[in-house]
Length: 71
Image 1 (tube, rainbow, N blue to C red):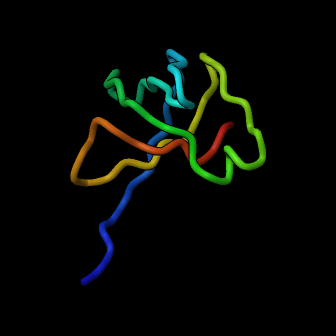
Image 2 (image 1 turned 90 degrees about the vertical axis):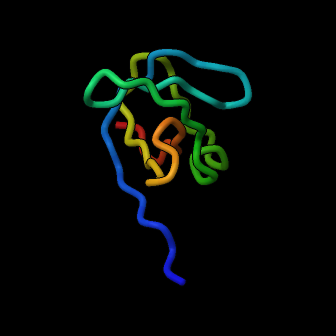
C-alpha cells in the first residue's frame, strides 16, 4: 500500500499556542493548526507570529498540518 500524498502550502503564522503548536493562515484565509516538524525542533528554529512558513497538509484532515520550513 502506498503512502498518502501530502501537499505543501505557503502561510503566515497568526498565533503561537502552547506545546510548539501554531495557528497558520494559508492561501485562501483558512486557519490551520500546525505543529513544528522534528528537525526544526531539534535545531531550535524559532517561529514567531508574523513569520512566513511552509505547511505540509494531509489529504485526510485539512485542518491540521506540520510546519516544515520558515522563510
